[in-house]
Image (tube, rainbow, N blue to C red; front, side):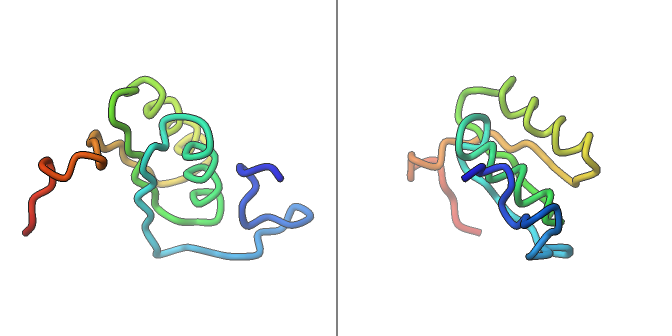
Length: 87
């Protein structure tokens, strides 16, 4: 299965996510990058999260934007609960 083709079947999108947003943690590379691209292809606005690989996250965001997707890049290590604050 190609993770980058989430929501696609025979060239058609099965699930449309317009108006929805997704925060994909660890999306600067690997499976996370593929999930972020797949969600964007299905119409979601995507927040690409990275802990340390800014260049990788920016490359994923550029690929999403180049295909017409809405995307932002957010740095943050979600594995460290001390870095989280409630609002």
